[in-house]
Image (cartoon, rainbow, N blue to C red; front, side, top):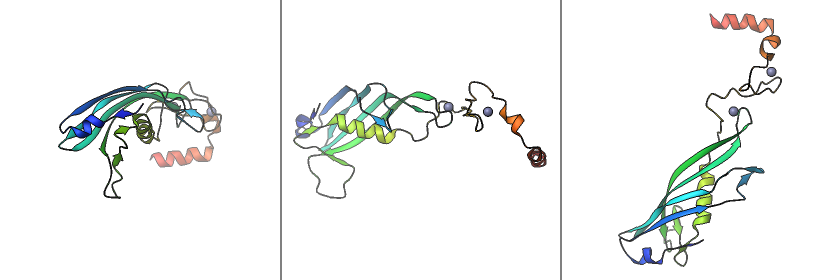
Length: 165
Ligand SMILES: [Zn+2]
Ligand SMILES: [Zn+2]
């Protein structure tokens, strides 16, 4: 749903509340669902002396496999975004400015691009996640597998002792 910004652009020192809830059914990476809740968007568009800015907070839940143990871990993300809006750009280098054509802004697409860029690359179910046993694949958060001691090479044990001194 496009955001009608005619009034904000033509009226100095005016503002417009933004309060939306977007559902992105198709947000996925390599077939994995990323955003698992509606995205709550709240903020405002303000015209301060002719400079039109959009500030908003996006809040949602996302889920990805943990980098260490591969269990799907869900997290809540809340981020603030700021964009300068303009009807046209005189300077070609102004990458930061969002062009608003016909006084309408496609907020749905903008929010989608913003949150995708913000999703962290590093993803752990917990900072203390123990990961998987490299030998048998057991999820070490669920319990020890017993591989470690059996597989230890006696020569390595000597080396370990030397390193500890
Ligand atoms: Zn984990
Ligand atoms: Zn193991």
